[in-house]
Length: 377
Ligand code: SAH
Image (cartoon, rainbow, N blue to C red):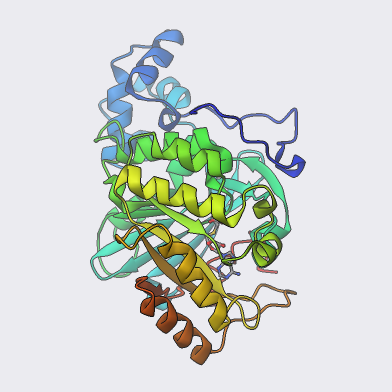
């Protein structure tokens, strides 16, 4: 089961002949880091010191790595801590508690991450691919296609950069740390499975091998690549799964989430239910409310029926996302009255339902708006 190939549409194939991002210690586990140094003729025990700088001290300036011999420092840093990405712009909203960063990767690809501070927690929304091949018509990222998969270290670096900014008191609200990570930035995380799992491991590995976060604070959001959901259930890392359903019927979902033509609503929801059963983690169903498209009362009833057909043991909850209209899109957010009725009907069927607060709208940092236009176009 674990290596079952996912037959993905051609648009998902990565362009051939591209160079890979430079290898970085966050791509490797503790043993592999040591081995890499030894391979380069450097002392293996330095790997732990480099890891401590990166994951525990959040240092990025080699001059501060004073426990490394000056003569070897450059070589060690080049071997395991190469620069992976450059911040091009940071935009703030919500009095500085929401910060979106536009990054340029080594090959010029652009991605975005968003830091959101709430009372008592800080969530980083990270990208897992430059662009996305899933082509959901209401999502800004979906319009440009896939450029490439990100490496494990490129994913991790977004979180480390957020942690650094917090540790250095650069974010409104005082010093702090990242408590939650959501794979809800650019890209389809389960279409870049290996790198994403690597990133989850680095986030959860205890310091100094990783950031030492709790898996419970990590959410992987997916369009529903069924074999990958099953594989994720078997990893033994109880991350929260979010399934972007957006419609309870195949006819509409085929249009809103085109991968549905490959994996039907029934198959996809079944995989999510199996995930909840295996991991004992409650699955989150994402549903972007689009006026006159998917927000009818009958669809709320149908969604409730689809979800409760697997029992009402609390395996699932629904997270309604007010649609963030993207430029040129024909869709708009639902009428608040329709949204309230949708919530009421789901709850009447016993499905816990919340409406997501949309942070960072004015900096195009809200769900589905991450399109990485460097000039804000
Ligand atoms: N590929 C993953 C992660 C994408 S972004 C996935 O599809 O789950 C995270 C969430 O934002 C998804 O539920 C996605 O459908 C939603 N989203 C995308 N565009 C949106 C928009 N314009 N308004 C509201 N939500 C949107």
